[in-house]
Length: 468
Image 1 (cartoon, helix red, strand yellow):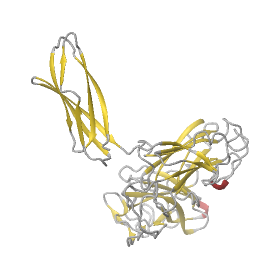
Image 2 (cartoon, one colour):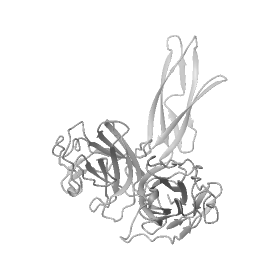
Image 3 (cartoon, helix red, strand yellow):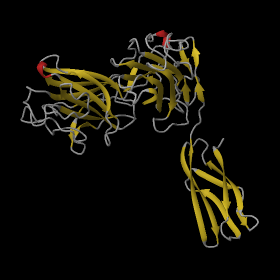
Image 4 (cartoon, helix red, strand yellow):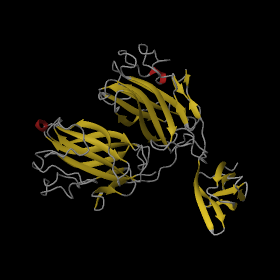
């Protein structure tokens, strides 16, 4: 059926106007059309208002996207027009989960959103109690037992919906498209010591939890935190149920199951449809294109090492060796090697004080970088034990306006000399050229930062191509 919508408009004569006005409605873009239920509007002192109904519709049955129609009023040589935008999306239902005894967690049917409703309110047996606690798949993570309801940490609700954080979509949750997790939590005090770790899995029957993002509540009390990611393709034909997990913790470290006394983890299971038009005739995995390992070249425009061809790895090689004006040849090549001009510290000597000497990004599945893939970041740094360095890892899906998303922190001074620091993450947002940043900072006084700017600190970026 061709998508269409009716629009009723009211026209009113002002002043002493009396006469007949011509009315028309037509397409402004090729994918849209419009018809009016009348072509003449007659106004008189006894009839100052007329209503007209316009039917806007697409010209293609399977069309999804934006179009425009135009309404035209004319009276003699006077012409007035009004453009009406229209957007057509596949409409999926809003679903509310039911407790699934097989998964031991809330589960939804296919739709554009999946809400836990009231199933997660409270925490465990002491706060609520929470229905069917702990509400993690196969009871794989238990809730903390300390605290009071509406005072201490708890997850009250989880919603997964299509669309990104800023723009909800109307279509079904479908592989390869953006989804957003909305977690309503109760934050203790000011929320400054609470953290929500967001995870997903594409196999709810055998979950491998992949970290998306960690968010701190901006204040105490009830707060809704949001994180977006790309719904991955199904790993097997007979598995359509994905799941998300929110691990909500008081202090501690990022984990899919921190398990401390005030912590809570909850899961939400939901089906993800295959891409429209996807057909499969075999259960064998698709053949991967022969991607190669890529060595970065310095990009003068970007100001950082870049791999512009999709590969299985992106390696800076020797492009980062040293720090600023301290390097094996007197200086770091093309320093500071950052997209936004963040500067390196100017004090210290080469391989006596801290430096980032190399960054390698690897695809964990061995294929070319693609949205939704899990990656490993390896940073080769030089530090000494007495200098107490920390390395902060960041990710940005958009190099044109880098918004650095914190991945994690590694203590970098456990031994003297060069060492490789590793961090796992995933490419959970779309973008053709994406970036990783490593910020190596001396001491813990400033805390994590994408640009700490200390006298002996080093910051470097690496840019790599990603298949969307």
